Structure formats: structure tokens, C-alpha cells
Length: 403
Image (tube, rainbow, N blue to C red; front, top):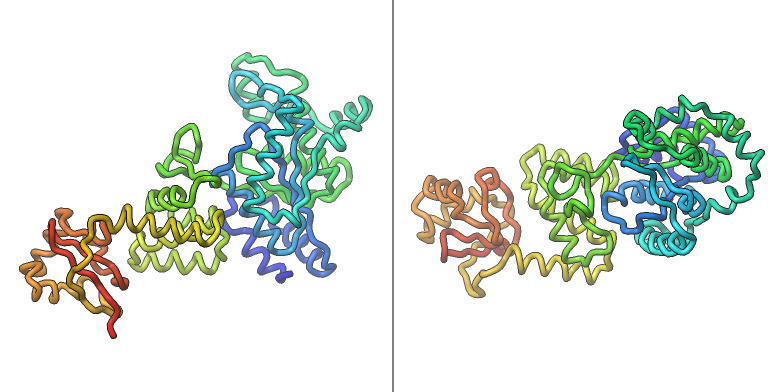
């Protein structure tokens, strides 16, 4: 295991809220000193089995802790799924049948093991312990919580104010989910910010039953390709983890430049120190397109084998960056030159009349780099070997390595 300070650095990367940091450090220190892994809990709702990068934010954080040597337990809410969870809409979520729960759980597990290590991940179903509670146990459990506390949950509050019916059984859902933490004696539970109430309920119940409280980690909601709305299949702004490598790579290249660092933090397992270097590079004027290209390769590599990634890169370069480029074109040898550095050579080749002429063409969208329009702020970028510049409609030049 890494030392507690180093583990903290990795665990805190990209986290929205943590309750609380001091307790987490003490748990990590105890785990390190005794060489006993912490129990990491994630509860899965078996009603939504299709996973995209937005869903994977929590799973990637769990994978990071799994790589640190901690024990991951996935709780499939088969018992709670058959009862139904409040949705915050006009009515409660429809309860699922045994067959639906099992089918969805199988699909979900198949997908999560594209992220988590199957051999070291424990999957359990909460029917194992919840079905054994008798009515006396349930009454005793419910006595640990007040109606006022339950009504703090936003969806209950809104439905009550709108005079929308709330079933008594729905009040038990957060209690049952919290009881999962008791059954596991979990040290850490993760979820999105939309799961704040349920996860904190686990801490509350553990305290009521004299069990050491779990740490609550809440991950941010990841914005989709539009850069505004949260990633969602219904909005069409998602990147599915089951999508072909070519589609995944292209979609990552479509995210706004402003989300590059956020995607590195939430959608990859890159070390915080490496992400700091990326931030510094962007702040120093590095071409966002180049860094996004690296991001696309990293994300695609997380869900596809190397051969598929290579084909995705080749497909993207051919279809979107280097289309309509002739085979035999003039070449310029470069080492660490920028586009501005080779303007003199372009003038000698009669491709442009002057530097001001080149700047004018760039500002008018008349210059392309690898099939993509070049902007003025990109003219100070370092040229890569095999890059191709197109000036106007027919003038091409390819950059090759100096011998």
C-alpha cells in the first residue's frame, strides 16, 4: 500500500464533497499500519443497466481505490429494487420483478467489469440480509429516524408540497440502503451528488447502532458533449462505455476545450501530478486539440484493447483530419519549429506572399492543419512530424523529421 498521504492525494482527485477528510485519513492510517484493506461500498440500482462515462465517474474513483489495495463490494439492490425508489417525479418508481432485477443486474455487472477488477470485486445482493429482518427489526430500525429527517430529502419534500402521493413504503428505501452499510460494516461509500441523502443516511444509521461511521464520497455530475447539460442518453450528449472505439475516440474529440481538464480528472485514472502538468501546458499556450487527442486515446484505451484503439486513431486521422490530402506533396524538415517559424519557408515556396498574407488567410479560415481549420492562437504550436498544412484549396506541405 502507498502511504496515507499519497493515498489521500489520489482519492481526493476530482471529488466534489467528502465527509469527512480527517476521518478518512485516520481510516487510511489504520489500514496502512495493520495492512487491512478498507471496505469500499457502492450500491447499484438495477433499473438502469446502460452505463456511459457519466455513470463511470464513480466507478473510476472506486477503481483507483481498488488499485490502492482496498476491498470493493458492489451491492445490487435486488430487494430495494423490487420495492421501488422515489424518483422526484410525479410518482414513485415502479417496482421491478425478480426477473427484471436479475436481468438488469447481469447486464450492469458485465459493464462494470470493464472498469473494475472482476477477480477482486465482491458482488452481493441486499436481499441476503434485508429479507431476514422481521417486523420487530423493521420497527426498531425505523425508530432511529424521524419523519422530519426523511422529509429533508428533496424529492419527498417536493412531492409533499405538490400534494403528490407518497407511499409509506418509500420512506423505508433510504433506511434499507443505509442498512446495507451496517451489513457490510463499510468504511467508505461512494455516489454521485444526487445520492447525498441516501449515503449520509448510512453514516447516521451506523452511528445510531454504535458502528464506526463510513466516509461519504460524492463525485460530480459529468457534463456531456454539449458542455452544458449532464451526460445523458436521453439528451444524446453521452459517450457509452460499450460504444465502438472509433465512435468513442471521435466523441471525446468533440468535447469543448473548457472540459479537457475535467474529463482528465473524472473520466481517466491519470495521477493528480500528471493532470497538474496538463493544466500547466494548457495555461502555457499548448494546443488544446493536441491534449484532447491524448485524452481521447487514454479514454478509449480504458475500454478497448490496443488493436481497437490503434484502428480508432487511424480511422479518426483518415476520416476527420487528413482527408483529401494528396500522396505526393512538398515536404519541410522540422525538429522543434512552430508554424510561425516556417512562414519564411512557405514564402520561398511561393505558397504565401508574406507573413501578413499568411495571418490574413488563417483569420479567414483558409489554412488547415491535418484537415482542421487553423486558428490564430494555434500558429505558435510546435509542429509534429507528418503534420500536413493546407493553404487555400490546392497548396499542401508535409512536415518530416530532420535527418
